[in-house]
Length: 254
Ligand code: G
Ligand code: G
Ligand code: NA
Ligand code: MN
Image (tube, rainbow, N blue to C red):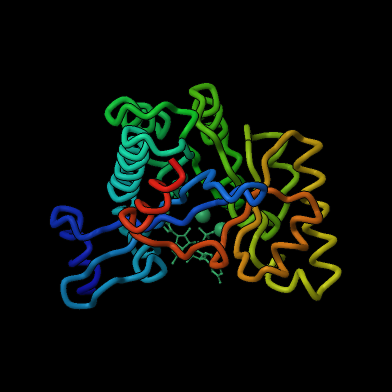
């Protein structure tokens, strides 16, 4: 309960921080996209992971202003990296279902893009299959508006939902993120390799991008690479880290 009270004030007190985790093009090692992952720098508890407060933020509705803060901060950071002359990358933010039920999300996104001066094509919105499962007309219209604006939509944790293929027809999707449950044992489990391979082929056939998440070992990377997966994310490349931590890497590549 005290966590809930603290959280209400945390936005005003500027206690949330974003960490970023790169999605890497393994062909040449460059960062294609930075995924923003929120943390809470609590005055007495230290760095609180999102698993501890996102569900509560969803319940209380605080996810709406928090989500907008995440979006604005991530777009600002990306614009700042571009202004600094670093190689251009996309920026990805995660979306909660609640953010879709609160007014017009596409208007919020358009406003934040205008305010931060980031071109829409650099922004990726990561949604889980549970969001798409609710194929209410309004949800579909919101995604179509985002698509027309030029914003990219990525399906997170792909393969863990119920009727994944159905969404691909109904929603303007640009990228699939292969869930890390299929990556974990990919080097030793032929079934996981077959599933990942099928997702990669399907993505290619549908003209979608594909990113493997949760890549932790060179062996996993090699199996995925042999399956023609070019984009990967995971601890092998980088853990989520504050923006400043990437400055030397990005500066070196510029
Ligand atoms: O960063 P970490 O691996 O601890 O993230 C745990 C979960 O929290 C992930 O499922 C991630 O998608 C979610 N998460 C992280 N940042 C955000 C955010 O800004 N908004 C939403 N809705 N979820 C987030
Ligand atoms: O659901 P989503 O994909 O947004 O979850 C992001 C979470 O996954 C973050 O909390 C991040 O710390 C975690 N994560 C990122 N890369 C890896 C990895 O290689 N292995 C594991 N186990 N977790 C990872
Ligand atoms: Na994500
Ligand atoms: Mn994921």
